[in-house]
Length: 288
Image (cartoon, rainbow, N blue to C red):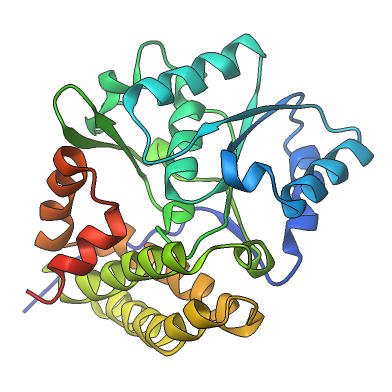
């Protein structure tokens, strides 16, 4: 069978323990005047986040913090984040957190250059113009959102989840620092890890898979399978956290190129209608 494919991996990747220290230099390299930092409430209270803020202050980097994300984002919270960025005249965005935070940050980047609401862009290729530069720093392993072109939001009144899918959502930089994932509690370590495992398995069996994505998917499966339980029972194990973060990233690369399968399609209504966390919904459906 003859197959034709194009392989994409957009962000410049900086990885390794304490690699988040490169954030100020990245911000300066893109001549950003005021960066919108999107972070979830829990991580914003950690010493890790305070260290990041202190490093920005030390380098005289201007920033505005949006920290209202507590769970999977609604279209309303996405619009609020975009509005906050416009009011503060932000010209680049940094998401620090799990998939909900990264998705919100990516969407805010396009709302800073495109008129309208999150709802106007849910669907495929509805975004008209590129957003502002985007730096993604995952604190979970995870959704792989730091390397994908998708941002998913809930429409509460319809009890539906819909994604913005556009090449303009690809992040420009991804910082993979396993130290930032150490504070993740066991239940979130498990659910986000199973989300990453679903990405890896689904992209491997997808009809759109090719010899390149299959190799990456298999590597991601091995990394996650061999380390998820260790990270769950021993959160301080930096080696396991590192392998999980890299596995999640690779699964995201495969997801972005080969897509997923019915597991994710069926997991969306579980989240939108019943509020089941995305990773848990995938884990329930995956064996079947």
